[in-house]
Amino acid sequence: MSDQLNKISTGLKNLLSDKITGTWQLLSETDYFLSRTGIHSNYESQMRDLRNRLNSVNKSGKEKIIKEVHSEIVDLRKELRLLGYDVSLGKHRLVFDGFRHDDSMRKGFRRVVLFILDDYFLWLKGEANHVELAEILEQQIKRHSQTAKKNIRVREKHYLWYLRTKQELILSGSDTETKKDYERLKAFGEASSLLFLSRLKDLK
Image (cartoon, rainbow, N blue to C red):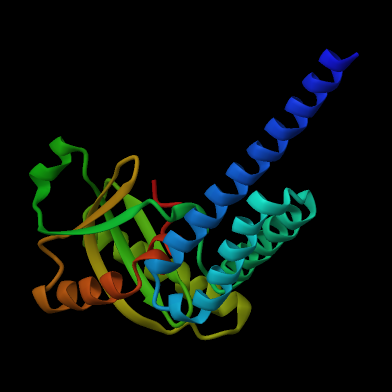
């Protein structure tokens, strides 16, 4: 009987340990994500409080605390998604790598035109040259505007080469892109890399 009780006790301790470890990992990933945004200071005290409460579990062993902390982290990640961030991209990097030419296709790069609007991005990739891709996207926007009876304001247009790796999105300017436009895009991307990555998540 005592052996069975010991096994049950050990199993419960291991289960509690796994839950703590999983919650710690989720908290660390969320904190790291926030550190790469410009809004980390808004959540700094909350992160500190969550860490302190998890540390207290080691002393109290209360599963209730783990559940509460885990639930708060999940709610925070939902809040970040509503703000336009994709927390799953926390380990991904946005890389601006100068200018490239047509021979970059041999290295796996593809053409894309990127239109930046007030609240979102529109893009079109393809085998056609950048000017043709831009014309196609412009026609699509025009048709949508006429159908929806709503004017779509394009703030910027960019003509790029891109390469998607496991944890990077590499963007380079094409011959059609001006240096001034590319530098402006680079400044925007580097200032808000995670938001930028979120809006280009489906660019494969």
